[in-house]
Length: 191
Image (cartoon, rainbow, N blue to C red; front, side):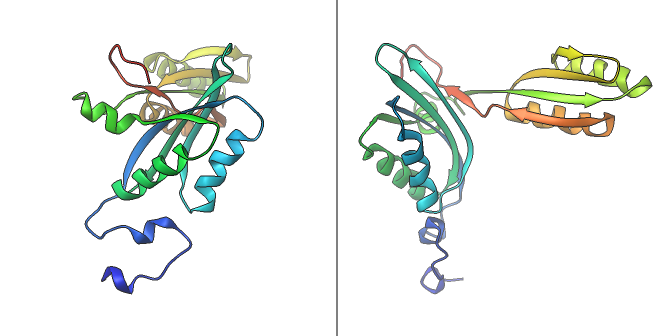
């Protein structure tokens, strides 16, 4: 289909060139830790039809009242560049780094990314034993247990957590809570 025949969908994705393929990028945004900043950042995404695949926020420099927002999003290179420029224009934003682009500049495939999940599994008998055995193989820790359930804590790449969850489903998976991605680039340089 020709790009000129595409109808606007309310999303920014329709304006992308046909030759550009959507990519997943991890953005790190340093902001003032004050009320309303996160809402403004998220509003930028939702108002323009951009999707957030993962969002993590925490104060990282208490004395300076700065927080780091880590956002995993998907888009064409053109759309991702637009997102970055629009984030930079929000007043309490100090810095925006596309960690994916920066990792490529450093000769690396991706930034270091980790996620934490709490996974509740209920069961008895062989299923319970198998859940414990598999949790050990995934290096998941038991942080709560009784005769009816376990709560495991697991950290790693999102794909590892996805795999662990898939394996636990037939063994009595009850509930999952995931933190979202925390990420930074390798090397001595900061953000």
